[in-house]
Length: 293
Image (tube, rainbow, N blue to C red; front, side, top):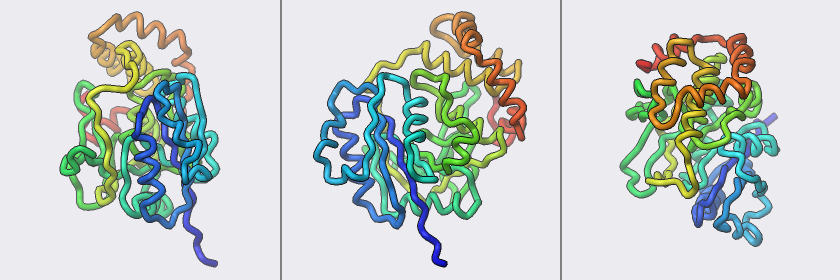
């Protein structure tokens, strides 16, 4: 019996993306692939008509459109995953372009069993010579990009711009953190959860997508939301010493006030469930990737 190629649902959270959504979908549907794809656009309260082209879009039959009222990037992605028809998921930003057979080569590692979640190399649309290969964390929990490797390698953090994962694994870890109602740390939290629950995250440096790196967001991003997500992530996954350290990173607003809200939102119940699930401790994970936090 011949092996049929896998089917992938590609989820794009969208907010005020202007012409980028069409550029991204045009690229997705015109590059070569042997994979059956569907695109799921989760339009999270855009006000700029960036998805209006879909009405008479030539690939409309391959696109599912969902409109939400400002649920944030984490929950937008989770909603998209909930509507996915296919057993494999790709989470992609709606401001990028793809190369020939990109998805075929990424999904291969998951089908083969050499990884549980994979990202490609991510280059800049403005200057494709600028390239990052998966991510790690600095001592202040900022993102830093890995240098190039020759072949598939383990990465601490999968950049949210492009993550490939099976629906089964995604559902098993509970998806993106639903307690994050605004932008910030969602890809880091998912990556930590995958590693701590016994899954493996890799970068395939020989597959490249090009991404529009912006100097500002086309929607409001507030410090309080970013810090809330940081403290919530710390409570979900860190030990007491590192929770304290995470609180010291709050330099705008009150860490005590943010922590109080996080605790009121029931984070300790989820923390207890996560501790039971762990196959690895945070200390071990940070040591593995030389994260000095």
